[in-house]
Length: 220
Image (cartoon, rainbow, N blue to C red; front, side, top):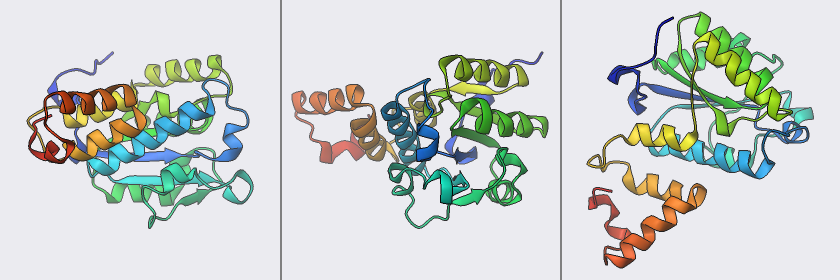
């Protein structure tokens, strides 16, 4: 068994590509591992973090004319981007999606979607078998039951996947408080989708009399 460790195993925005799978109304109807509110919030936070760190993001749905359009909280982040609509449950069997990922030239493949045990597990396991470095963002996924979600995560880990949450991913992309290029945008994402941290930071700015407009130079 090989272990994922060392500096090179950490995720970097310049090497990452994000694929969001089937965040659609039909999927929410049978979501029971999380509340719909939690999944929508986390998926939106993940999407905005990807935009903040300039990570290419592929949006894909399955049979959208019946399953519904991807949540606007996601598509509004990339309003001009085509959503790739599939018939396959396994996204990695859709040539258009795979070609879009390969065209980015990135090697760290990050995946989130609904349901964890079906439309996330299959492409993750498939891509791992082709040698991709795959990370699953578990709290932007969800299954038809807690058991389905958790067993799917265990299955993907056993296949070699890395797993983490959306805030852990965004923090790993940021990595160093001295990197100020994306700080202002990152804090905006925290304010909207991780308010415990985001609002606390605004309060800190207030107490220190360092207003938000100075964020770019704050070394957050």
